[in-house]
Structure formats: C-alpha cells, structure tokens
Length: 394
Ligand SMILES: *Cc1c(COP(=O)(O)O)cnc(C)c1O
Image (cartoon, rainbow, N blue to C red; front, top):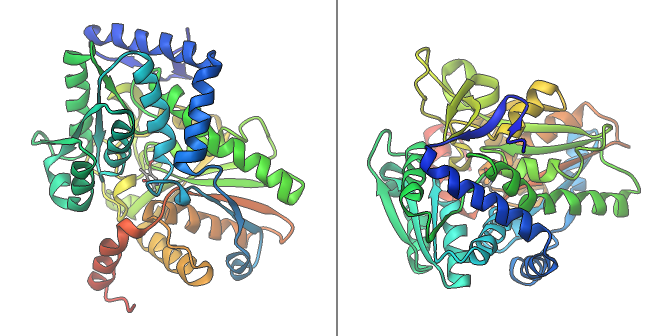
C-alpha cells in the first residue's frame, strides 16, 4: 500500500491512531466498490447540493483581459455556498456506513465547520467542531450557523488559537474517541488516506468541468486555475485534467502582503518541507523549524501547510503554483462583481486574479477554466474593513 505522493504524505500519527486510519482506508475502498454508496452520494449531490454546477463563459471578463476565453466553474452555487459540501457529504456517508454516531471537525474561518454541521444535521449525527479561540471571536456569524444547525463548537485556547491548533486538538480527540467518532477533515491534507478520499469526493468538480468544456467548446481547456489553501478545491478540479498533458494546471496561493514580508499563507512558494498534522508536506516555518502563523485577507486560505499531492505536483512540475497578494485578490473581486454580476469568495478571487493575469498573455481562441470555489456573501464585512483601512473608495 502506497501512502505517499513521492516523499510527501504518509501517516505521521501516534501508534494508537493507526488502527483508526486502517479501518477508514478499508471502509473507503469497500464503499467505492459498492454501487449503493455511489447511488446515494449521486442522489444527494444532485438533489441536496444542486449539482451539477454550471460552467459559465464569462464573456465580459474575457474581453476585459483581452486574451483567452475565461470559463468559471460555479461551485459558489452549491448548497452552503462553496465546494466544501462535496467532501463533507462523502465523508459523512462513510461515517454512517462505519456505524459512527459522532462527527468531529477542525475549522479556521468556520466554513468547513458549517459544512460539517450541515451534513451532521442531515444524517442525524452528533457534531463537535474544534476551532481556535481567536477564530471563534473573529468568525461569529459562522459560529452562530454551526449552533443553529445543532453542532457544538469547542474553542481551543492552545498555541496561536487558530486553525493549526484546532487541527492538533481534533486529532488528539479522535485518538481518544475513534471507537464511535469519525474525524471529518476539511481539506486534502492530514494523514493518509484523507488526502486521497478528499480528492475522490472533490473530483466531481473536475469530471464535470471536463465534460462541460468538451460539450460547450468542443475541446479541452488550455489551463485550469484554482486557489490553494489546503488544496481540496484545486485537487478536485485538477483531478479531471491530470491525465491530459496539454492542460496546464495552476494553483494560486495566498500571498498576503507579499512572500518577502513573511505575512502570507503561501506554503509551497514560501515554506519548507516538514511534518505536522499527520503528513509530510510544505509548511510555513521559521529558521528553527517552528510552525509560523499565516496571513491572508481570505480566512479560508489561512492554512500553514498544503496537501501532499500538491507538494508532489509542484516538485514534478505537473502543476505550477503562483502567489496572489491580498491587493490583487481584492482587485479581482471588484472586477468580477462589476463585469459579471458575480460576488466571489475572497479565496476564489485569488484564482480569478491568476486567471486574469494568464488570460491576458494568451490568444482569444484559447480557454482557461477558473474554479469559483465559493460565493462572497460571507466576506462583505471583511472587504469593507479592508477598503476602509486602505482608503479605497467604494
Ligand atoms: C475553504 C475554502 C477554500 C480553501 O480550501 P481548499 O481546501 O484549498 O479548497 C477555498 N475557497 C473557499 C470558498 C473555501 O471556503
């Protein structure tokens, strides 16, 4: 059994957790072979999430960039407003198959917490979400959403009281309770088999996009772009095109105030190989190997690491990873709002910014697909504050 992507990935966990990971892997492969599992997942993706999501030709945005034709994969139109529900549904179905009664999850900005609380309500499961105390204070509306959905929120007061500490705490809790508890990881990271199964559940994005592009354009895109936090929406859309060598895969990391300032969340471009959260991957670290805090205008890209397959795709050159700074993401946010009437999540605005840059260097008969991972309603306060602070007009 290969638990690695090149040198990345693996299962760097306490011995006491190995049994739980092996059980998860066994049940995952059994579920994949079970037509009833696929049928139920398909049914929920269609009738609960509202899939498939459209592939939309953004003509005014394309024209403004003066190059390639830009298509948007509209994950923002999913129930709960982002791609995350594709993964939480799949894992919750697995949890139910395994007879687990309780879901736990880590969350930073709260979006994965809300997506997990959503499926816990749907399946009548108990749910407890681990969240850094700092994030609990900063993300009050999402904490409120989790509460109304019936989930408990546990504020973690260790370390910097943010996402990485919440993930440490969730892993510890799982070690103690794996008998009846399923740990629902929110991105394509963590110990094997999580990166693999999160990719599988998010690959619906790439499979749909490939088929839709062939239907609408009669050919494959030249490039596919997604933002990269932990890497789940990116690996999901990449999955549809990884075997098509003519398709450039591009991941946009959060550059914050600039990689050279140290205030960013670009783990591949500005990090080093290390081990945390059960995996070997790129992490932001200081010169002593201590994990560094992140900065990004978009809370959902604020993870100090990145999934192992992205590390491998970066090293091998199959995918290119770029950096988009706060300012560029905000500009792309404004542009998409004004030209297309679509308010993107700030995370997704990083992908849009990269797409606009690349489109301008390409020809009008070329095609770029940008993954619009989520909608921006949640970011309105954030945007207003950013603009007030930077003296930008409305
Ligand atoms: C959480 C989130 C992300 C970042 O997570 P990935 O695992 O890197 O996809 C991106 N976009 C939106 C809208 C999110 O909510």
